[in-house]
Image (cartoon, rainbow, N blue to C red; front, side, top):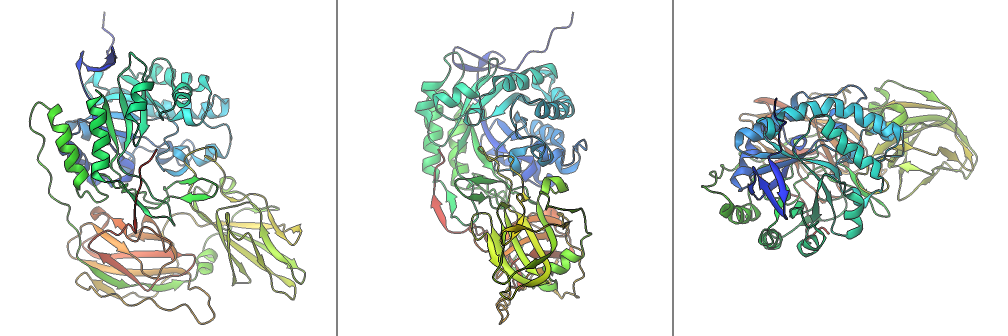
Length: 603
Protein backbone atom coordinates (compact mmCIF):
# COMPACT_ATOMS: atom_id res chain seq x y z
CA UNK A 1 0.00 0.00 0.00
CA UNK A 2 1.41 3.39 -1.04
CA UNK A 3 2.07 5.72 1.86
CA UNK A 4 0.34 9.09 1.66
CA UNK A 5 2.72 12.01 1.07
CA UNK A 6 3.64 13.89 4.22
CA UNK A 7 4.29 17.60 4.63
CA UNK A 8 7.90 18.66 4.94
CA UNK A 9 7.09 21.48 7.38
CA UNK A 10 5.11 20.82 10.54
CA UNK A 11 4.85 22.44 13.96
CA UNK A 12 4.83 21.04 17.47
CA UNK A 13 5.03 22.60 20.94
CA UNK A 14 5.47 26.05 19.42
CA UNK A 15 8.35 25.06 17.13
CA UNK A 16 8.50 24.92 13.33
CA UNK A 17 9.94 21.61 12.15
CA UNK A 18 11.39 20.46 8.84
CA UNK A 19 11.40 16.67 8.50
CA UNK A 20 10.86 16.63 12.26
CA UNK A 21 13.87 18.81 13.11
CA UNK A 22 13.77 22.44 14.36
CA UNK A 23 13.77 24.90 11.50
CA UNK A 24 13.49 28.61 10.88
CA UNK A 25 11.87 29.90 7.72
CA UNK A 26 14.01 32.84 6.58
CA UNK A 27 11.99 34.15 3.69
CA UNK A 28 11.61 37.17 1.51
CA UNK A 29 8.75 38.22 -0.74
CA UNK A 30 9.64 38.32 -4.45
CA UNK A 31 6.72 38.55 -6.89
CA UNK A 32 7.26 37.00 -10.32
CA UNK A 33 4.49 39.17 -11.75
CA UNK A 34 6.44 42.33 -10.90
CA UNK A 35 9.70 41.21 -12.54
CA UNK A 36 10.57 40.61 -16.18
CA UNK A 37 10.84 36.80 -16.51
CA UNK A 38 14.36 37.07 -17.94
CA UNK A 39 15.34 38.54 -14.56
CA UNK A 40 13.62 36.01 -12.30
CA UNK A 41 16.75 33.92 -11.74
CA UNK A 42 18.87 36.97 -10.98
CA UNK A 43 16.47 38.21 -8.32
CA UNK A 44 16.17 34.77 -6.75
CA UNK A 45 19.95 34.44 -6.57
CA UNK A 46 20.16 37.82 -4.86
CA UNK A 47 17.57 36.62 -2.35
CA UNK A 48 19.59 33.49 -1.65
CA UNK A 49 22.72 35.61 -1.22
CA UNK A 50 20.81 37.67 1.35
CA UNK A 51 20.65 34.51 3.45
CA UNK A 52 17.04 33.56 2.76
CA UNK A 53 16.17 29.88 2.58
CA UNK A 54 12.65 30.52 1.22
CA UNK A 55 10.96 32.82 -1.27
CA UNK A 56 7.34 33.79 -0.82
CA UNK A 57 5.12 34.87 -3.67
CA UNK A 58 1.48 35.62 -4.22
CA UNK A 59 -0.35 34.34 -7.28
CA UNK A 60 -2.66 37.13 -8.51
CA UNK A 61 -5.77 35.60 -10.01
CA UNK A 62 -6.53 38.59 -12.24
CA UNK A 63 -3.04 38.46 -13.77
CA UNK A 64 -3.75 34.95 -15.04
CA UNK A 65 -7.45 35.24 -15.94
CA UNK A 66 -7.99 38.70 -17.37
CA UNK A 67 -10.88 37.36 -19.42
CA UNK A 68 -13.16 34.86 -17.75
CA UNK A 69 -12.29 31.33 -18.83
CA UNK A 70 -9.10 32.35 -20.66
CA UNK A 71 -6.51 31.23 -18.10
CA UNK A 72 -2.91 32.05 -19.01
CA UNK A 73 0.23 30.46 -17.53
CA UNK A 74 2.62 31.24 -20.37
CA UNK A 75 5.61 33.58 -20.54
CA UNK A 76 5.47 36.23 -17.84
CA UNK A 77 2.63 34.26 -16.22
CA UNK A 78 4.51 30.96 -15.99
CA UNK A 79 4.35 30.67 -12.21
CA UNK A 80 5.47 27.05 -12.37
CA UNK A 81 8.74 28.08 -14.03
CA UNK A 82 9.35 30.68 -11.32
CA UNK A 83 8.77 28.09 -8.60
CA UNK A 84 11.07 25.57 -10.30
CA UNK A 85 13.76 28.24 -10.69
CA UNK A 86 13.55 28.96 -6.97
CA UNK A 87 14.13 25.30 -6.25
CA UNK A 88 17.13 25.20 -8.61
CA UNK A 89 18.61 28.19 -6.79
CA UNK A 90 18.22 26.29 -3.51
CA UNK A 91 15.17 28.07 -2.09
CA UNK A 92 11.97 26.67 -0.66
CA UNK A 93 8.77 28.35 -1.82
CA UNK A 94 5.99 29.72 0.37
CA UNK A 95 3.16 30.20 -2.10
CA UNK A 96 0.14 32.43 -1.42
CA UNK A 97 -2.54 31.60 -4.01
CA UNK A 98 -5.70 32.83 -2.29
CA UNK A 99 -8.35 34.60 -4.38
CA UNK A 100 -7.43 37.87 -2.65
CA UNK A 101 -3.82 38.99 -2.18
CA UNK A 102 -3.94 42.74 -1.34
CA UNK A 103 -0.28 43.44 -2.31
CA UNK A 104 -1.11 46.96 -3.58
CA UNK A 105 -2.16 45.08 -6.72
CA UNK A 106 -5.18 46.02 -8.81
CA UNK A 107 -8.42 44.88 -7.12
CA UNK A 108 -6.37 42.85 -4.63
CA UNK A 109 -5.94 40.21 -7.32
CA UNK A 110 -9.66 39.59 -7.85
CA UNK A 111 -10.64 39.77 -11.54
CA UNK A 112 -12.61 42.87 -12.45
CA UNK A 113 -15.17 40.78 -14.31
CA UNK A 114 -15.98 38.96 -11.05
CA UNK A 115 -16.16 42.05 -8.82
CA UNK A 116 -18.46 43.51 -11.46
CA UNK A 117 -20.78 40.53 -11.04
CA UNK A 118 -21.06 40.21 -7.27
CA UNK A 119 -20.47 42.51 -4.33
CA UNK A 120 -20.05 39.55 -1.97
CA UNK A 121 -16.31 39.19 -2.47
CA UNK A 122 -14.34 36.93 -0.13
CA UNK A 123 -17.48 35.20 1.15
CA UNK A 124 -19.32 31.92 0.69
CA UNK A 125 -21.61 33.63 -1.81
CA UNK A 126 -22.33 30.97 -4.49
CA UNK A 127 -21.40 33.29 -7.37
CA UNK A 128 -18.04 34.10 -5.82
CA UNK A 129 -17.24 30.52 -4.83
CA UNK A 130 -18.18 29.13 -8.24
CA UNK A 131 -15.58 31.40 -9.82
CA UNK A 132 -13.00 30.55 -7.15
CA UNK A 133 -13.54 26.83 -7.66
CA UNK A 134 -13.15 27.13 -11.43
CA UNK A 135 -9.91 29.08 -10.89
CA UNK A 136 -8.59 26.59 -8.35
CA UNK A 137 -9.38 23.74 -10.74
CA UNK A 138 -6.89 25.38 -13.11
CA UNK A 139 -4.31 26.60 -10.60
CA UNK A 140 -3.92 24.05 -7.84
CA UNK A 141 -3.20 21.02 -10.08
CA UNK A 142 -0.24 23.05 -11.36
CA UNK A 143 1.06 23.68 -7.85
CA UNK A 144 0.43 20.28 -6.27
CA UNK A 145 3.22 18.41 -8.15
CA UNK A 146 5.68 21.13 -7.14
CA UNK A 147 5.26 20.47 -3.42
CA UNK A 148 8.24 19.32 -1.38
CA UNK A 149 6.37 16.11 -0.59
CA UNK A 150 6.70 15.28 -4.30
CA UNK A 151 10.27 16.50 -4.66
CA UNK A 152 9.47 20.14 -5.46
CA UNK A 153 10.26 23.35 -3.56
CA UNK A 154 6.80 24.34 -2.20
CA UNK A 155 6.77 23.88 1.57
CA UNK A 156 3.87 26.11 2.66
CA UNK A 157 0.62 27.41 1.20
CA UNK A 158 -1.47 30.31 2.50
CA UNK A 159 -5.25 29.86 2.71
CA UNK A 160 -6.33 33.54 2.76
CA UNK A 161 -4.66 36.87 3.27
CA UNK A 162 -5.40 39.16 6.22
CA UNK A 163 -9.01 38.03 6.24
CA UNK A 164 -9.39 39.06 9.87
CA UNK A 165 -9.28 42.72 8.85
CA UNK A 166 -11.99 42.23 6.24
CA UNK A 167 -14.71 39.68 7.00
CA UNK A 168 -16.23 37.05 9.25
CA UNK A 169 -17.45 34.29 6.91
CA UNK A 170 -16.14 31.10 8.51
CA UNK A 171 -17.67 28.93 5.78
CA UNK A 172 -15.60 30.79 3.18
CA UNK A 173 -12.32 30.04 4.96
CA UNK A 174 -13.31 26.40 5.41
CA UNK A 175 -14.18 26.18 1.73
CA UNK A 176 -10.76 27.51 0.72
CA UNK A 177 -8.93 25.22 3.14
CA UNK A 178 -10.85 22.14 2.01
CA UNK A 179 -10.49 23.12 -1.63
CA UNK A 180 -6.70 23.16 -1.30
CA UNK A 181 -6.61 19.79 0.43
CA UNK A 182 -9.07 18.17 -1.98
CA UNK A 183 -6.99 19.32 -4.94
CA UNK A 184 -3.84 17.74 -3.57
CA UNK A 185 -2.14 20.27 -1.30
CA UNK A 186 -0.46 18.35 1.54
CA UNK A 187 2.11 20.88 2.75
CA UNK A 188 1.74 23.26 5.69
CA UNK A 189 -1.29 25.55 5.42
CA UNK A 190 -1.17 29.03 6.91
CA UNK A 191 -3.24 32.16 7.41
CA UNK A 192 -1.88 35.70 7.94
CA UNK A 193 -3.37 38.49 10.05
CA UNK A 194 -2.52 41.63 11.95
CA UNK A 195 -1.61 41.68 15.62
CA UNK A 196 -5.00 42.15 17.26
CA UNK A 197 -7.08 39.44 18.91
CA UNK A 198 -10.08 40.25 16.74
CA UNK A 199 -8.10 39.95 13.50
CA UNK A 200 -6.60 36.64 14.58
CA UNK A 201 -9.98 35.26 15.62
CA UNK A 202 -11.74 36.25 12.39
CA UNK A 203 -8.88 35.30 10.07
CA UNK A 204 -7.98 31.88 11.47
CA UNK A 205 -9.28 28.50 10.39
CA UNK A 206 -8.70 25.09 11.95
CA UNK A 207 -5.99 23.12 10.19
CA UNK A 208 -3.93 26.16 9.21
CA UNK A 209 -1.08 27.67 11.21
CA UNK A 210 -1.68 31.30 12.03
CA UNK A 211 1.00 33.83 11.09
CA UNK A 212 1.24 37.59 11.53
CA UNK A 213 1.82 40.73 9.47
CA UNK A 214 3.43 43.79 11.03
CA UNK A 215 6.10 46.44 10.90
CA UNK A 216 6.78 46.34 14.63
CA UNK A 217 4.72 43.89 16.66
CA UNK A 218 6.82 41.02 17.92
CA UNK A 219 5.57 41.32 21.49
CA UNK A 220 1.93 41.25 20.42
CA UNK A 221 2.57 38.34 18.05
CA UNK A 222 4.15 36.34 20.87
CA UNK A 223 1.13 37.07 23.06
CA UNK A 224 -1.42 36.15 20.37
CA UNK A 225 0.29 33.04 18.99
CA UNK A 226 -1.70 29.85 19.46
CA UNK A 227 0.42 27.89 22.02
CA UNK A 228 1.11 24.81 19.91
CA UNK A 229 1.81 26.79 16.73
CA UNK A 230 5.13 28.20 15.61
CA UNK A 231 5.79 31.94 15.80
CA UNK A 232 6.02 33.42 12.31
CA UNK A 233 5.68 36.82 10.69
CA UNK A 234 4.53 36.22 7.12
CA UNK A 235 5.03 39.90 6.28
CA UNK A 236 7.62 41.88 8.17
CA UNK A 237 7.26 45.29 6.57
CA UNK A 238 10.83 46.39 6.09
CA UNK A 239 9.68 49.30 3.94
CA UNK A 240 6.44 50.61 2.51
CA UNK A 241 4.72 51.48 -0.76
CA UNK A 242 3.95 54.94 -2.14
CA UNK A 243 0.84 56.77 -3.31
CA UNK A 244 0.78 59.42 -6.00
CA UNK A 245 0.85 62.87 -4.44
CA UNK A 246 2.54 61.74 -1.23
CA UNK A 247 6.20 61.28 -0.28
CA UNK A 248 8.45 58.29 -0.89
CA UNK A 249 8.27 56.05 2.17
CA UNK A 250 11.46 54.57 3.59
CA UNK A 251 12.43 52.68 6.71
CA UNK A 252 15.96 52.76 8.08
CA UNK A 253 18.06 49.61 8.01
CA UNK A 254 18.55 49.91 11.77
CA UNK A 255 14.81 49.99 12.40
CA UNK A 256 14.09 47.08 10.07
CA UNK A 257 16.86 44.81 11.35
CA UNK A 258 15.95 45.63 14.94
CA UNK A 259 12.50 44.13 14.45
CA UNK A 260 13.86 41.16 12.48
CA UNK A 261 16.41 40.33 15.16
CA UNK A 262 13.79 40.70 17.90
CA UNK A 263 11.61 38.18 16.08
CA UNK A 264 14.49 35.75 15.56
CA UNK A 265 15.50 36.06 19.21
CA UNK A 266 11.94 35.13 20.17
CA UNK A 267 12.31 31.89 18.21
CA UNK A 268 10.30 33.09 15.24
CA UNK A 269 10.43 32.66 11.50
CA UNK A 270 10.19 35.60 9.14
CA UNK A 271 9.32 36.64 5.63
CA UNK A 272 10.54 40.11 4.73
CA UNK A 273 7.94 42.06 2.77
CA UNK A 274 9.27 43.03 0.32
CA UNK A 275 12.73 41.49 -0.14
CA UNK A 276 12.58 42.73 -3.72
CA UNK A 277 9.59 44.85 -4.64
CA UNK A 278 9.83 45.06 -8.41
CA UNK A 279 7.46 47.15 -10.50
CA UNK A 280 3.72 47.59 -11.02
CA UNK A 281 4.08 47.35 -14.78
CA UNK A 282 1.14 48.16 -17.01
CA UNK A 283 -1.83 49.41 -15.03
CA UNK A 284 -1.58 46.77 -12.30
CA UNK A 285 -0.91 49.25 -9.48
CA UNK A 286 -3.75 49.22 -6.98
CA UNK A 287 -5.08 51.95 -4.72
CA UNK A 288 -6.16 52.52 -1.16
CA UNK A 289 -9.14 54.48 0.11
CA UNK A 290 -8.88 56.44 3.34
CA UNK A 291 -11.52 59.12 2.94
CA UNK A 292 -10.18 59.76 -0.56
CA UNK A 293 -8.74 57.57 -3.30
CA UNK A 294 -5.00 56.96 -2.90
CA UNK A 295 -3.61 55.47 -6.13
CA UNK A 296 -0.35 53.53 -5.82
CA UNK A 297 2.64 54.55 -7.92
CA UNK A 298 4.18 52.44 -10.69
CA UNK A 299 7.30 51.57 -8.70
CA UNK A 300 6.99 48.90 -6.03
CA UNK A 301 10.57 49.37 -4.88
CA UNK A 302 9.22 49.54 -1.31
CA UNK A 303 12.66 50.57 0.01
CA UNK A 304 13.41 46.84 -0.08
CA UNK A 305 16.81 45.21 0.58
CA UNK A 306 17.02 44.37 -3.12
CA UNK A 307 16.11 47.47 -5.12
CA UNK A 308 13.74 47.72 -8.04
CA UNK A 309 16.61 47.10 -10.49
CA UNK A 310 18.33 44.48 -8.32
CA UNK A 311 20.75 46.85 -6.60
CA UNK A 312 21.65 45.98 -3.00
CA UNK A 313 21.56 48.29 0.01
CA UNK A 314 22.30 48.37 3.75
CA UNK A 315 19.19 46.33 4.54
CA UNK A 316 20.46 43.51 2.34
CA UNK A 317 23.76 43.35 4.17
CA UNK A 318 22.11 43.62 7.60
CA UNK A 319 19.78 40.69 6.83
CA UNK A 320 22.63 38.66 5.37
CA UNK A 321 24.52 39.06 8.64
CA UNK A 322 21.42 38.22 10.72
CA UNK A 323 20.49 35.14 8.67
CA UNK A 324 23.99 33.69 8.26
CA UNK A 325 24.15 31.97 11.70
CA UNK A 326 21.08 29.87 10.77
CA UNK A 327 22.94 28.24 7.85
CA UNK A 328 25.33 25.31 8.16
CA UNK A 329 27.66 26.52 5.44
CA UNK A 330 28.70 29.72 3.72
CA UNK A 331 26.10 31.86 2.02
CA UNK A 332 26.18 32.24 -1.76
CA UNK A 333 28.45 34.96 -3.09
CA UNK A 334 26.89 38.38 -3.58
CA UNK A 335 26.05 38.93 -7.26
CA UNK A 336 27.52 41.83 -9.20
CA UNK A 337 25.65 45.11 -9.42
CA UNK A 338 23.15 45.37 -12.28
CA UNK A 339 24.25 47.19 -15.44
CA UNK A 340 22.61 50.52 -16.33
CA UNK A 341 22.51 52.59 -19.45
CA UNK A 342 24.36 55.89 -19.55
CA UNK A 343 22.48 59.16 -19.44
CA UNK A 344 20.77 60.19 -22.66
CA UNK A 345 17.79 62.12 -23.94
CA UNK A 346 15.54 62.22 -26.97
CA UNK A 347 12.93 64.74 -28.09
CA UNK A 348 9.33 63.74 -27.48
CA UNK A 349 7.55 64.60 -30.71
CA UNK A 350 3.76 65.13 -30.57
CA UNK A 351 1.80 63.11 -33.08
CA UNK A 352 -1.88 63.22 -32.10
CA UNK A 353 -4.10 65.02 -29.62
CA UNK A 354 -5.99 63.09 -26.96
CA UNK A 355 -9.17 63.50 -28.98
CA UNK A 356 -7.36 62.25 -32.11
CA UNK A 357 -6.49 59.08 -30.18
CA UNK A 358 -10.11 58.80 -29.04
CA UNK A 359 -11.40 59.21 -32.61
CA UNK A 360 -9.01 56.51 -33.83
CA UNK A 361 -10.59 54.06 -31.37
CA UNK A 362 -13.64 52.13 -32.66
CA UNK A 363 -16.95 53.26 -31.28
CA UNK A 364 -18.55 50.69 -29.01
CA UNK A 365 -21.83 50.29 -27.18
CA UNK A 366 -24.61 52.86 -27.61
CA UNK A 367 -26.83 53.09 -24.51
CA UNK A 368 -29.27 55.44 -22.83
CA UNK A 369 -27.07 55.80 -19.74
CA UNK A 370 -23.27 55.65 -19.55
CA UNK A 371 -21.92 52.20 -18.70
CA UNK A 372 -19.35 51.29 -16.07
CA UNK A 373 -15.98 49.92 -17.14
CA UNK A 374 -17.07 46.45 -16.02
CA UNK A 375 -20.13 46.52 -18.29
CA UNK A 376 -17.85 47.46 -21.18
CA UNK A 377 -15.28 44.76 -20.46
CA UNK A 378 -12.72 47.47 -19.68
CA UNK A 379 -10.16 46.24 -17.18
CA UNK A 380 -8.50 49.61 -16.58
CA UNK A 381 -7.12 52.64 -18.37
CA UNK A 382 -9.24 55.07 -20.39
CA UNK A 383 -12.80 55.03 -21.71
CA UNK A 384 -14.24 57.90 -23.75
CA UNK A 385 -17.94 58.62 -23.18
CA UNK A 386 -19.79 60.82 -25.71
CA UNK A 387 -23.27 62.32 -25.87
CA UNK A 388 -24.98 65.10 -27.83
CA UNK A 389 -26.25 67.57 -25.26
CA UNK A 390 -28.22 70.79 -25.09
CA UNK A 391 -28.02 73.22 -22.22
CA UNK A 392 -29.65 76.39 -20.99
CA UNK A 393 -27.73 79.60 -20.19
CA UNK A 394 -25.81 79.24 -16.94
CA UNK A 395 -25.96 75.42 -16.86
CA UNK A 396 -23.15 73.11 -15.72
CA UNK A 397 -22.26 69.51 -16.49
CA UNK A 398 -21.90 67.26 -13.43
CA UNK A 399 -20.83 63.66 -12.83
CA UNK A 400 -22.02 62.65 -9.38
CA UNK A 401 -20.24 59.29 -9.04
CA UNK A 402 -17.03 59.32 -11.04
CA UNK A 403 -14.35 56.65 -10.65
CA UNK A 404 -11.90 58.22 -10.96
CA UNK A 405 -11.05 61.17 -13.23
CA UNK A 406 -12.36 62.67 -16.45
CA UNK A 407 -11.09 65.19 -18.97
CA UNK A 408 -14.11 66.98 -20.44
CA UNK A 409 -14.41 68.38 -23.97
CA UNK A 410 -17.28 70.20 -25.69
CA UNK A 411 -17.15 70.10 -29.48
CA UNK A 412 -13.45 69.35 -29.24
CA UNK A 413 -12.66 72.22 -26.88
CA UNK A 414 -11.29 71.28 -23.48
CA UNK A 415 -13.62 72.30 -20.62
CA UNK A 416 -11.49 71.03 -17.72
CA UNK A 417 -10.99 68.08 -15.41
CA UNK A 418 -13.49 66.32 -13.11
CA UNK A 419 -12.27 64.21 -10.20
CA UNK A 420 -13.87 61.75 -7.84
CA UNK A 421 -12.56 63.59 -4.77
CA UNK A 422 -12.36 67.06 -6.29
CA UNK A 423 -14.27 69.16 -8.81
CA UNK A 424 -17.35 67.23 -9.97
CA UNK A 425 -19.01 69.84 -12.19
CA UNK A 426 -17.90 72.27 -14.89
CA UNK A 427 -19.65 75.32 -16.24
CA UNK A 428 -20.90 75.12 -19.81
CA UNK A 429 -20.74 78.15 -22.13
CA UNK A 430 -22.90 80.84 -20.53
CA UNK A 431 -25.02 81.53 -23.59
CA UNK A 432 -26.54 78.02 -23.75
CA UNK A 433 -26.53 75.84 -26.84
CA UNK A 434 -25.91 72.30 -28.03
CA UNK A 435 -22.86 70.21 -28.82
CA UNK A 436 -20.92 66.98 -28.45
CA UNK A 437 -19.80 66.28 -24.88
CA UNK A 438 -16.77 63.99 -24.58
CA UNK A 439 -15.60 62.68 -21.21
CA UNK A 440 -12.31 60.76 -21.26
CA UNK A 441 -12.53 58.82 -18.02
CA UNK A 442 -9.48 57.31 -16.33
CA UNK A 443 -9.39 54.54 -13.77
CA UNK A 444 -6.46 55.51 -11.57
CA UNK A 445 -6.13 52.13 -9.89
CA UNK A 446 -8.52 49.55 -8.47
CA UNK A 447 -8.71 49.53 -4.68
CA UNK A 448 -6.89 46.55 -3.19
CA UNK A 449 -7.61 46.79 0.54
CA UNK A 450 -10.60 47.34 2.80
CA UNK A 451 -14.34 47.69 2.27
CA UNK A 452 -13.99 49.50 -1.07
CA UNK A 453 -12.21 46.56 -2.70
CA UNK A 454 -13.99 45.55 -5.88
CA UNK A 455 -15.78 48.83 -6.52
CA UNK A 456 -16.65 49.68 -10.10
CA UNK A 457 -14.88 52.15 -12.37
CA UNK A 458 -16.16 54.73 -14.82
CA UNK A 459 -19.33 56.84 -14.71
CA UNK A 460 -21.58 55.09 -12.20
CA UNK A 461 -24.61 57.36 -11.69
CA UNK A 462 -25.09 59.23 -14.92
CA UNK A 463 -24.21 62.71 -16.15
CA UNK A 464 -26.42 65.71 -15.44
CA UNK A 465 -26.84 68.91 -17.43
CA UNK A 466 -28.26 71.19 -14.81
CA UNK A 467 -30.81 69.04 -12.99
CA UNK A 468 -31.61 66.60 -15.82
CA UNK A 469 -29.73 63.54 -17.04
CA UNK A 470 -27.96 63.48 -20.38
CA UNK A 471 -29.14 60.43 -22.31
CA UNK A 472 -27.81 58.72 -25.39
CA UNK A 473 -24.17 57.67 -24.90
CA UNK A 474 -21.53 55.97 -26.98
CA UNK A 475 -18.34 54.45 -25.57
CA UNK A 476 -14.80 53.95 -26.83
CA UNK A 477 -12.50 51.68 -24.78
CA UNK A 478 -8.95 52.81 -25.43
CA UNK A 479 -7.40 49.64 -24.05
CA UNK A 480 -3.83 49.17 -22.88
CA UNK A 481 -1.98 48.65 -26.16
CA UNK A 482 0.28 51.43 -27.37
CA UNK A 483 -1.87 53.90 -29.32
CA UNK A 484 -1.32 53.50 -33.03
CA UNK A 485 -2.19 57.03 -34.08
CA UNK A 486 0.25 58.30 -36.66
CA UNK A 487 3.16 60.38 -35.43
CA UNK A 488 5.64 62.41 -37.48
CA UNK A 489 9.11 61.11 -38.25
CA UNK A 490 11.10 61.19 -35.05
CA UNK A 491 14.82 61.94 -34.89
CA UNK A 492 16.89 59.20 -33.29
CA UNK A 493 18.80 60.12 -30.14
CA UNK A 494 22.07 58.35 -29.46
CA UNK A 495 22.67 57.26 -25.87
CA UNK A 496 25.74 59.46 -25.59
CA UNK A 497 23.52 62.54 -25.55
CA UNK A 498 23.05 63.89 -22.05
CA UNK A 499 21.51 67.35 -22.23
CA UNK A 500 17.69 67.42 -22.60
CA UNK A 501 15.78 70.17 -24.31
CA UNK A 502 13.77 72.38 -21.94
CA UNK A 503 10.03 71.63 -21.71
CA UNK A 504 7.94 73.56 -24.18
CA UNK A 505 5.60 76.11 -22.59
CA UNK A 506 1.86 75.63 -22.34
CA UNK A 507 0.14 77.46 -25.24
CA UNK A 508 -0.83 81.09 -24.61
CA UNK A 509 -4.51 80.22 -24.27
CA UNK A 510 -3.68 77.91 -21.35
CA UNK A 511 -4.83 74.75 -23.13
CA UNK A 512 -2.57 71.80 -22.19
CA UNK A 513 -0.82 70.02 -25.06
CA UNK A 514 -2.37 66.62 -24.36
CA UNK A 515 -2.16 63.51 -26.51
CA UNK A 516 0.31 61.07 -27.98
CA UNK A 517 3.99 61.69 -28.56
CA UNK A 518 6.90 59.50 -29.63
CA UNK A 519 10.60 59.47 -28.83
CA UNK A 520 13.28 57.22 -30.31
CA UNK A 521 16.48 56.17 -28.59
CA UNK A 522 19.27 54.32 -30.37
CA UNK A 523 20.92 51.90 -27.92
CA UNK A 524 24.13 50.05 -28.66
CA UNK A 525 24.18 47.82 -25.57
CA UNK A 526 20.76 47.13 -24.01
CA UNK A 527 20.68 47.34 -20.22
CA UNK A 528 18.44 48.60 -17.44
CA UNK A 529 17.44 52.26 -17.59
CA UNK A 530 15.62 54.86 -15.52
CA UNK A 531 13.30 57.01 -17.64
CA UNK A 532 12.08 60.50 -16.81
CA UNK A 533 9.57 62.70 -18.64
CA UNK A 534 10.22 66.33 -17.66
CA UNK A 535 7.21 68.54 -18.23
CA UNK A 536 4.77 65.63 -18.54
CA UNK A 537 1.65 65.75 -16.37
CA UNK A 538 -0.42 62.54 -16.40
CA UNK A 539 0.90 59.98 -18.84
CA UNK A 540 1.04 56.31 -19.69
CA UNK A 541 4.36 55.13 -21.13
CA UNK A 542 5.14 52.33 -23.58
CA UNK A 543 8.63 51.06 -24.43
CA UNK A 544 8.73 49.09 -27.68
CA UNK A 545 5.02 48.39 -27.27
CA UNK A 546 5.24 47.30 -23.61
CA UNK A 547 3.27 49.39 -21.12
CA UNK A 548 5.76 50.36 -18.40
CA UNK A 549 3.12 52.14 -16.31
CA UNK A 550 2.06 55.64 -15.32
CA UNK A 551 4.18 58.76 -14.95
CA UNK A 552 2.62 61.69 -13.08
CA UNK A 553 3.89 65.15 -12.24
CA UNK A 554 2.34 65.00 -8.75
CA UNK A 555 5.10 62.54 -7.78
CA UNK A 556 6.70 61.37 -5.70
CA UNK A 557 8.02 58.95 -8.33
CA UNK A 558 10.03 60.70 -11.04
CA UNK A 559 11.76 57.86 -12.91
CA UNK A 560 10.21 54.71 -14.36
CA UNK A 561 12.22 51.48 -14.35
CA UNK A 562 12.74 50.09 -17.85
CA UNK A 563 14.37 46.63 -17.51
CA UNK A 564 17.11 45.61 -19.88
CA UNK A 565 15.21 42.76 -21.58
CA UNK A 566 12.67 45.28 -22.96
CA UNK A 567 15.36 47.18 -24.87
CA UNK A 568 16.71 46.30 -28.29
CA UNK A 569 20.12 46.89 -29.81
CA UNK A 570 19.44 49.76 -32.19
CA UNK A 571 16.17 51.67 -32.44
CA UNK A 572 13.85 51.82 -29.43
CA UNK A 573 10.51 53.60 -29.48
CA UNK A 574 8.91 55.24 -26.45
CA UNK A 575 5.29 56.35 -26.69
CA UNK A 576 3.62 58.60 -24.16
CA UNK A 577 -0.11 59.24 -23.97
CA UNK A 578 -0.73 62.16 -21.63
CA UNK A 579 -4.25 63.32 -20.80
CA UNK A 580 -3.11 66.69 -19.52
CA UNK A 581 0.20 67.88 -20.90
CA UNK A 582 3.08 66.31 -22.78
CA UNK A 583 6.68 67.08 -21.91
CA UNK A 584 9.28 67.80 -24.56
CA UNK A 585 11.77 64.99 -23.96
CA UNK A 586 12.44 61.53 -22.61
CA UNK A 587 15.53 61.24 -20.47
CA UNK A 588 17.58 58.21 -19.44
CA UNK A 589 18.94 58.93 -15.99
CA UNK A 590 21.71 57.00 -14.32
CA UNK A 591 20.08 56.87 -10.89
CA UNK A 592 16.48 56.29 -9.80
CA UNK A 593 14.48 59.19 -8.40
CA UNK A 594 11.62 58.09 -6.16
CA UNK A 595 10.99 61.59 -4.84
CA UNK A 596 11.24 63.27 -1.43
CA UNK A 597 11.73 60.73 1.37
CA UNK A 598 9.72 60.19 4.52
CA UNK A 599 10.52 57.69 7.29
CA UNK A 600 7.49 55.43 7.69
CA UNK A 601 6.84 52.13 9.49
CA UNK A 602 3.67 50.24 8.60
CA UNK A 603 1.44 49.17 11.44
